Image: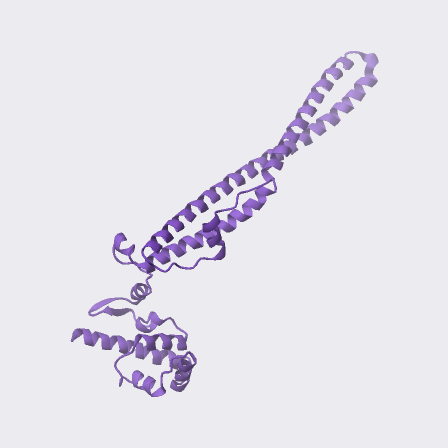
Length: 281
């Protein structure tokens, strides 16, 4: 008896929500009936009236789905009206918060232990969907990083660094040589014009050395950043490859269980089939 009463209360909740939402939207019962017909599942206006007025005590799952679509609301909110009831009777005599109930109904909250959840396709599919989303983001990142590496960013930075080192070394050697020559010239007063020339050249070399050392510092920083990006790109690639293997294993297990496999986005499907393209250049 309690079960029948509970089932009637669930139907009453659905009927009340249909009436409340319909009236909130300024929709007549006839318009709601017409909308159901447009969706391919006619529900006569008289049936709607009987339902809303309590003269009809049950609502089928099919009716609930088409009514939700006609009212443009999630079907679960007709059963558990979040925002309009604090608690709901999810099962006979079992009161719980409306949001918790709707998450349970929509499989937002997983139930059972890990072993039992492995047997539920919905939970497995949702878990794979999260992995697919993460993989799609990783593939986008890897593709962008691969373009940067293909352009030879790291190699260019290394060459620039070597050139800067060589320029600094040349300037330092020249500055040292001029220092010795200037010291000798300064020791002979008769060579004052030569000393002046060497002093001017030394000043110019010191200025060039200063600029070369600044370029060297910049080149070192660029090479460091390029190396870090290359390391990060490698990390992202390895992470993507790990997720690919996880999804492959998941789908193989699902297939062995006889489940219909969920569809995959094109980029993810290609990565599972052929792997991630190698970086060239």
